[in-house]
Image (cartoon, rainbow, N blue to C red):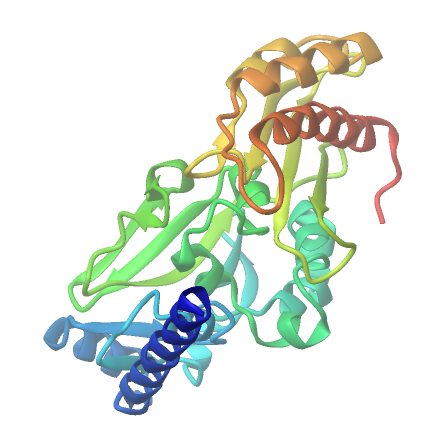
Length: 312
């Protein structure tokens, strides 16, 4: 009976917490600017708020009580942040571009297919139509599917406040688990990177608990540029997701492959070296040891696909 009473009391406490969170969510103010300048002015004058666009990440965090902001800044209607274009020999993607925008764009399919492959595996069609690239970056989860491709593409994050813009290499933008260099009065404006060419190679592979709508257990993106005589490249990037507080590049794998013929033995060595560049944790999706085994398999598979496979 005592145990039963404890269970009932625990349920009651849980209901009280849920009701409290629901009440707090009911009291959240939503501010919707009509222009980017207005949004930046609001950010400058009101710091205790959270930016919301597609809402696929922040709504879950609000529901679970992870965050409890007093005000949401709804920027979804800011069309000036929704674009995919080429400029100054860079592919430029606005923060409000959705994953469906990325999948549908002839520019990204031709010059950033690694990112397109990742976008195709982010949730179902409903999520791809609403979730934004800027939101995935701002959420800063190491399991964010768009992040390994952007690391492999050596992307630059452009942030903006009322005073102007600044550019940050993606590896410097993420500083710890769910922490970035984004200032309180800033928002992400765009991401840009050098386009892939027909001589470049690249691939993205993800492992989840199921085929669709799953958070990554491990995901890997590889990009090889600067094709040399034979099947070798002067620039190789191997990025690992969901195996550290932030996405990590495997420097050891890259050093093994740069400027060398990419034989199956070389790919195997690079895959094994990637394991030592990962520091995974154990959670409900998989143990740390399992993730290390997966890292080696996925790096091998991604490199093999990039070098020998056909691009979709």
